[in-house]
Image 1 (cartoon, rainbow, N blue to C red):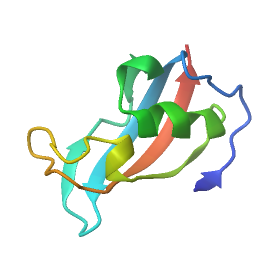
Image 2: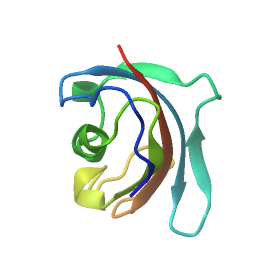
Image 3: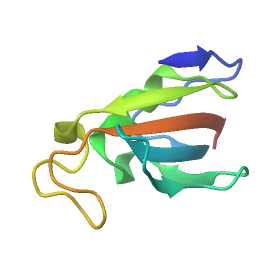
Image 4: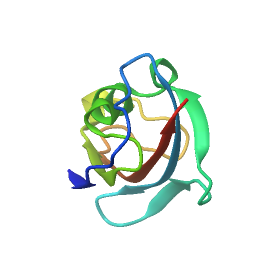
Length: 97
């Protein structure tokens, strides 16, 4: 869901982006969060839900990614994320690098 569309360029599935984000479960428990300056990464290096979802945002845009488990960590889970978990991310796309 896009709250603010943004005014810059849209990333593609192989772009490197800088994003500020907060990741949490449907019960509101936060499992990961960046600082306000965000972090940079390639969209081919993250879960499928990020790779697909980020292509709908433009630079300076923000909103939420609601990622079903099959586009995240599936039935296995990873670290503190249990198998079958639906993930929600509040995101702010700072830049496409």
